[in-house]
Length: 129
Image (cartoon, rainbow, N blue to C red; front, side, top):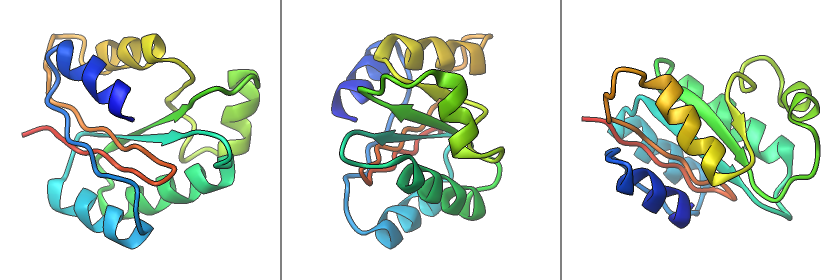
């Protein structure tokens, strides 16, 4: 999550990091920030089901935010990961920093730099102002 936030900030995005902690507290922070995008970062031993659960709950809190799931160090094919995440959390799935940055450029093609990031294991990042 920290490296992702640095990469995105270096690219000009407004990024906020919500440190890993109690899911309830992270979701409350996401709801306060009302980000455009929430990155949910999952690293082993976190599971896809944990990322999916946080994603679904974040969508309930901020339905207009786009969730991006970062499954770092995953060797599973993206298509399989998307299937396991389910339809409400599989639109944007990445497994590298370069893919995450590319996804941001695709989500903001006109150069708009507002962003938000959620770092799972239980971190959630919000940001755009």
